[in-house]
Image (cartoon, rainbow, N blue to C red; front, side, top):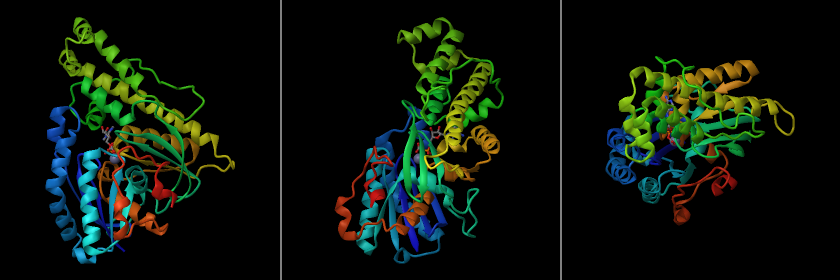
Length: 377
Ligand code: KG4
Ligand code: ZN
């Protein structure tokens, strides 16, 4: 079962080919330097890049998989969530291919794919995470630039949303704090590296919602607390910023390397402790049938962070619950290999559109897992 998958949900143009969940090729193009200068992803630039690089990426993925386009059995594409105008070129190209080659198209939810990235295997069929399959019931967590969501999974593609962020996503908090520290965009990896030289106890930062009786998070207060501490360090400069005279990112010019390293470490510790605290609560609460969760499955760009990985490993050892996350970094951040793997699981449930049904498929920038009509089929 050969699948060609496309992801253009954000700034990366990615195309992958799989045989079932066995990844044969995974190609991606990123122009992060352009977005970095701007301090975030520039949607019009992302769309332009997808339009330019999608076709060459398709050729390259097919060539690397040593196949021809006629050998593709299914096409798959992310239709949400993501940047509206970035999703468009990917969906259009997938529709065009499905019609031209008369093969079904599978509309994929990007956040489901971050979870199912864990079931991708390499060309030798070795798992690219710690497991060959999910056991149920389990908990699944997505941590990325736009999401911090917790789901109960009772079976494959069977999700119940039990926890979420009330404001910023954890990856967004890394990016916003990184901007204050003068790191450009995205800042997650830079904070992780800088934190290694820092003292994580120098700044006392809050753990929002620490004692609330739910599985929710809040990260915007943490970012504000970081700004408050930095303003204390920079004195008058901080006050000028509050009055709107100085840009946020310019604060970093008044910070020493030690300040930046200590704040990176203190922030990373606070953000991670918040995450772990609610996960511990959710894992100990068990589910309504009182069965213990078998796995804690993680997906999304933030799980590339090794400090967070190690903290989750400690939690998993403490509770005796199997921890699952993608091993290679490229499988944690956005990629089309995870779209191909997810397509394989959608097909097991009969979720696909025939070429004559494609007019119903449209981009869904704010798509959630709970509202995904295809997952209900
Ligand atoms: O999943 P992803 O590639 O794209 C989205 O769907 O959002 O996640 C991107 C997010 C960004 O916020 C980025 O700063 C964060 O993941 N990230 C990290 C690390 N690598 C990427 N955050 C913390 N530590 C990292 N090493
Ligand atoms: Zn993503």
